[in-house]
Amino acid sequence: MLEALAQGADLANGLGLELSGGAPPIHGWIVDTSIERDHERFSGFLKLSLEELFIALRDDISSLTDPEGLFHGGETQKASARAFAEKPRSLSLYPSGFSAGNLLDVVEAEAVWALI
Image (cartoon, rainbow, N blue to C red; front, top):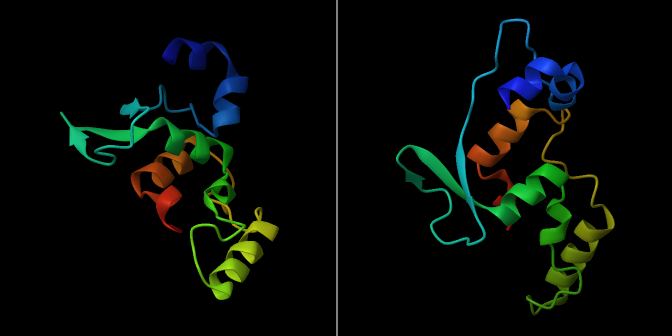
């Protein structure tokens, strides 16, 4: 990864990394297909689910909604879910724009799951 960043400014720019001070810090996670034990640390590394990482990378928290109200009984909950589904882009995990640092902050703060 460090080699790819050093050779291609486009990659660093796309990730919102400033490389003028040398190599960026490396940050490791344990990414698994299971959601069991999410956000626990193992040997200092945060464990998260692949689903959470995909949602965070796509900025797609709207995929976690229940627009038909199938999981909630009342009309109020259904109306609330529909209103949320109608404005999927009004809610963003990255209000100031995507960057590698912002992705790190979103995952570490469990922001993907905050609305559930």
